[in-house]
Figure 1 (cartoon, one colour):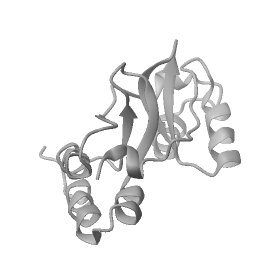
Figure 2 (cartoon, one colour):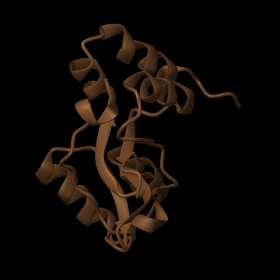
Figure 3 (cartoon, one colour):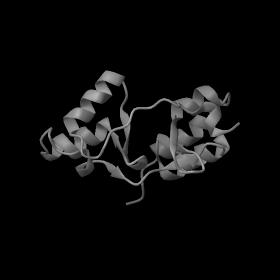
Length: 140
């Protein structure tokens, strides 16, 4: 089974110049906790509700702060035609709960999450193995 078979193809994204408040409102309205940050059709980072809370508000940034100031630069991704086991292994290694899904033109076409692995793979141990990696503490 390939990543494209289980990914979520419809996702919401935000630009790096949008504010934390705009990102939080979009997350609330779309009932998501994760947004890819896209500029000129290229994904340049990601933003989670935790980033807004911990990196942003708890660090004293006002709600008007640009997403670029608190986002995670760089992106963990897998190609759409990759095997889902490869995606699970990458999630485990990188300790991430989501991967962006790219086509071979490097265009973002979806998101695959631990939930997608769990529900879509038909293998309950696959998501569990990835979650184990996500849950392990990083080396200091």
